[in-house]
Image (cartoon, rainbow, N blue to C red; front, side):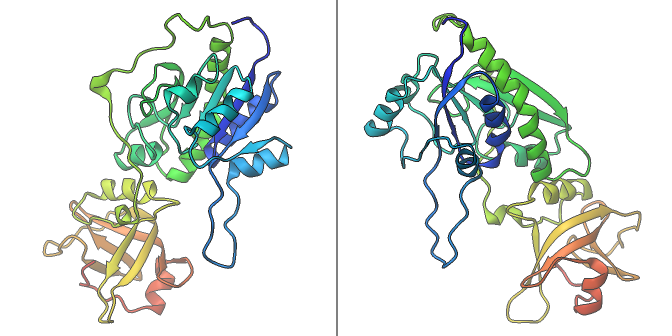
Length: 322
């Protein structure tokens, strides 16, 4: 492939893709089309907001295509018609088939929010935090039809901050991924289309990062204080960490836990994991190896509040088991 400006099709939906896409827009290369997921049809009167990539494309007067299935014959014909050199994919939500990837001479690259082969799948940032990893990063792969399985062309590593939530970390990784994406494009700019490219992923090191569900947010108080902290931060902004409190009402009180802290207060010897301990308007919960202090929470149907505000306005007696 000659060293010249490339024509690209960008494929993405969520916010993780926007910084890299914007960097490409500002480069000397050409964007033929932006492919994104179809708009969500809302059952409520208020329509769902457009996806971040759709908003970005509209703001920059870029053509948008949103097929239900990127691998349908009609979609592949549309890709072929763009005569693009390369597909750049990030946070899109569909896996491209061999036929789709072959619609561009250089195939496709994908920016992923982990150090592959760790955390292949839809929620790499959340799983890295939940597992307590000290560091994570981004990888840009040359795509194959196998989910996140292609050779790694570029990557970057960063430590995970001690108070960072998944939302904060994901934003930081999206910015970190800009340079790696541009580096991968430069590598492909002079690629002959035949020579081996990138570093193969070690099969023995593969781990999965499946999409989270609301049920994943429920806190397991039999874990250690440190493990619970990892969990609470990994669940933000979605699905959010929560616990259920039996208050004598017909339904348990659902409490979304936004922020916690370790405390030097010793766990009473007879306290079971999940037991509420009230100490001078501090809300403490017994864990496996100590006490977790709740700093900010959201009772069902109410606004976010501090633990002190909650304890002044709600009945959650000491000894309650969550």
